[in-house]
Image (cartoon, rainbow, N blue to C red; front, side, top):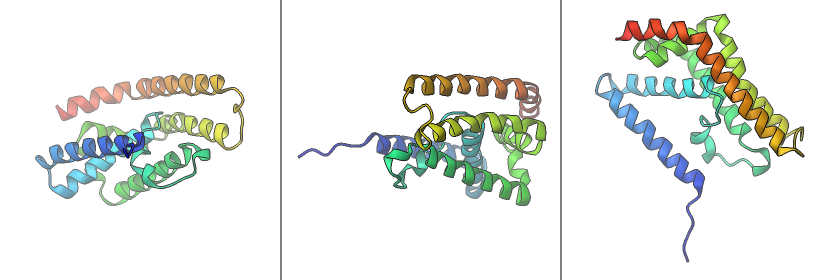
Length: 175
């Protein structure tokens, strides 16, 4: 009898190998602890600053009933990312200066005007919660996916518009 490999296992394997590859790449430039810390900061940038539900992939090994959707995993990923960043800013804020992406994350987290990026990327999580838990938009899946997609495009535009000038400065500093 053949066993089927679940799609979430394939995603988890691919994601972990991707993280391992980049950690090994960073290890050639920094010490192992610093490379792992930078990789976790990159992962937290992906969770906090993009409106897609990809940051919860490593947490999908935690069993949660299917009726809740992916928003519980994503909420846990947000909480862990915020905890990592608060700890990193309080204890070792120089770790953000090693790469342009982590430097941009530091600017976003420490500038109150840029918190708009975090809020705009948290809204799809609220839509998912309303869809799965409160049954708002549950009858009309097309409307739900239309709202998710349009808000994701809006969040990416907000991220680009707000950080465009900062990206120019950061890439000139790190080049």
